[in-house]
Image (cartoon, rainbow over all chains, first blue to last red; front, side):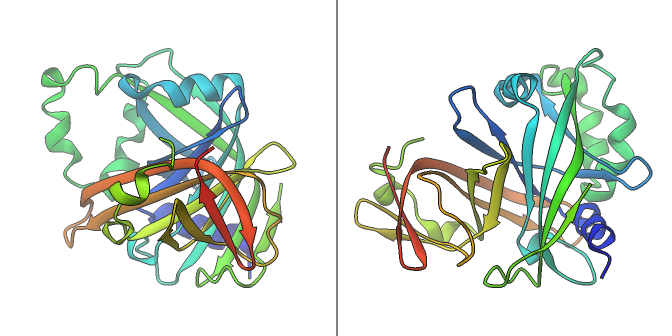
Length: 157
Length: 96
């Protein structure tokens, strides 16, 4: 099994993931996030409204993050595996208004109704001021069929 | 959100997935899928046998309902942080 390619299929087809960040006091905060994976760039992307910017602050201070993909009902792939990615995150927030627009194609594949919301951007201006989180995978743990009783397959960069 | 008092407020059956997360030795958060059940004063959190437990544990209960036409609805989640004590194959998560 090619662990990385298998994980890519899961990342591409998951409707939700768990993004975990580390606070300055060493606590872990976890938020469900829509994962947007680019095979071309080999990077995982998420967008975050500036209304919910605490996680962005924490990533700026400590870029080490974890992302879990689990729940077979959330992953529309021909097979199921639970995948955890340890990665280094970078925040892009120079253009909060449009800097995330290049990700809309990825977003639309998972949430086809996103265009209807985009048409209402003026009604929810702060929600649509969004930073981009780019995650470079450093280590991947993969549990076939989500069976965590068995040790995961591992991939390291 | 602290755990204390949440056992009465949080109905774990309202969430279709759960993840446990701790800070691994390399400084990265490490998560694994888990099953959470209420217990007196906290929650029972299943753990894989090969995971080295950490005292600080974050548990996230999550739910969405996928739509047949794509996307999802019914989004809800709750994140709980506390101290975990290992008992056999489980963590017991209690308030910090």
